[in-house]
Length: 124
Image (cartoon, rainbow, N blue to C red):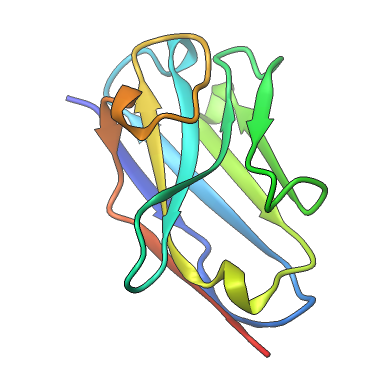
């Protein structure tokens, strides 16, 4: 059984930074691609960023390019999302997800395992 646990969310002012962490346990972490998604109140879940098993390939939503950085530490079975220059529209519950494939994708339906989410609130 694969489990994902997110942490690092909180309340921050616009322009500030947060780093989210996602610890993956239960299977061979290094063979999984991992992604971050978010869901704001009243909106559908949307893709944020994803990273390949090796960390060599990353993809981002246009709305976060240049502000967010995804990375991973396979020794710690952890994926990070560094979020800088935060905006009020970044407010959402952030979820990490893992897929039994080495390559990342923007499609949420392609991910096999999901965490419970962590709340990020950006005040103006």
